[in-house]
Image (cartoon, rainbow, N blue to C red; front, side, top):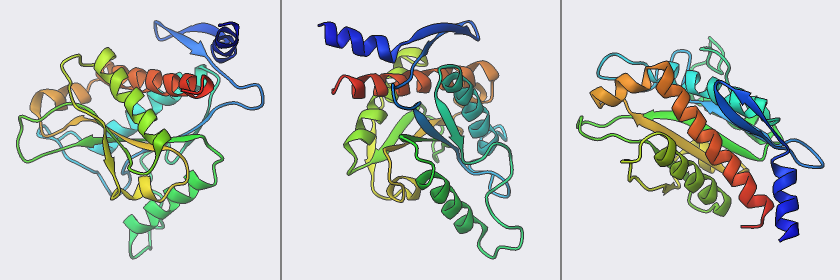
Length: 227
């Protein structure tokens, strides 16, 4: 029992107040936790366009920057694949998308990070579908654990009616080409009118960022306890 208490004490070193929320400050004895945050799309690539003309790349970046703030206030080190609307490609490139994705892969795989969280928005041909869902690489046990913790936190802190389950995938480039536990968080459906409006609002973006932060923190806590 004392060992578990000690681990929790090391994990939750202190608490601070940020954005009217209590943030748990966490670190390791040897080095800080390092997380790569990937705001999907950017530059020439808008991603999905919502029913009210919401632009995915802008929402992705907004949520990513909010999540970055939570993590950094908690003592973590954050690496961004992009910090603004500039894509990761040369203007003269004949295949900007490929160059962009390869550059993201390079940043992730050379970052020395523990995990990757990629922020995206979903869309479908029928408006009725909604709800955040987390994807992970099928062969990654830690990716599965990270995805489950984030999905649970989203249900708890954002939408208790969201009964979506995490889903494995072997097809997403960013999941299969990176060498650390990685997840894609599809924060909601821009094809759903009500959810698209929410995803465009600062308060809801903050709720999503907070939930993802809690999921990440729970993942690290489970790792420390050997769960």
